[in-house]
Image 1 (cartoon, one colour):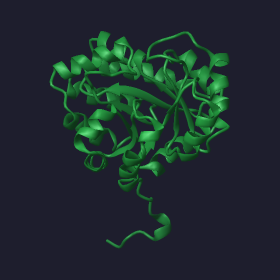
Image 2 (tube, helix red, strand yellow; image 1 turned 180 degrees about the horizontal axis):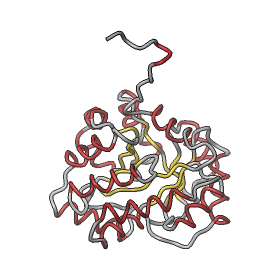
Image 3 (cartoon, helix red, strand yellow; image 1 turned 120 degrees about the vertical axis):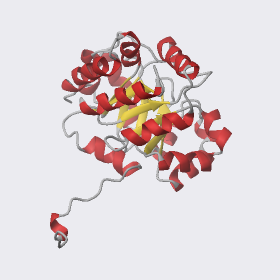
Length: 276
C-alpha cells in the first residue's frame, strides 16, 4: 500500500518532554488544563493504573503520578496515609513507572517524587529509566533551586522537564531566578504548608498567580488546597493555566468501593468548569 502524502500524515505526538507538556496546555485554549494527582500503588498497583485511566477518560490533560515515600514532607495526612498504604502493599518505583508507561500513551505524566529517590539511583540513571517509562516531567518538592543543576542536566539529557515549585513565601528575586529557568510549567503552591483540602477562592489565588506570571514565560499551574469544582473554576478565573487537584481525589479513592469510577466522576466535574 502506498504511503500517505506528507500533508496527510498525522505527526507523531512525542511520548515525553517539554513539547508534550506545552501541547497539553496549548490544546486547552480558553480553558485551564486539569492535572489530577494519583498516588502510584494506592490502594494497589492495578487499581492505581485504573484510576489514572479514569482520569484520562474524564478530562485530565496531564496526570501527576506520585511515588510513595516514607518521609513525604510536602504531603498532608490524606496523601501521606495513601503513600504509607501503598508501600505496605508492596509498591516500588519500578511498579509506579509501569503505571506511568501505561498512562503516558494517553496523557503526559508528571512524576512526583522526593529527592532521595533520585539520588539513590543517581540522577542520570533515574532520568533514563523515567524517560523509558514515558515520563514527561519530574516534580521534586524537596529539591532546592541551588541544588538542582545535576538533576536538571540529567532531565535535559533525557527530554524530561524538571518542573520547579514556588510558594506565596517565595521572594520576587527568587521567583525571577526560578521563572527564568523553568521548563514545562511552574508548579505554584497556593498556600503555605502541606497538601490538603482548604476553603481558598479566587481572591486568594490571584495574587500569587499574578506574581509568578510576571517572572516566567511558561504556563503557571496552581495546586495545594484545591478540592472542589468551584475552587478549580475559581483558580481558572484567577488566571491559572493549569489546576492541580490531589487530596480530594486520593480521599475519594480511599473511601469508594470502586475507586476508578468515583475519581473519574470527580475529574469530570472538575474539568467541566475550567473556563478562564
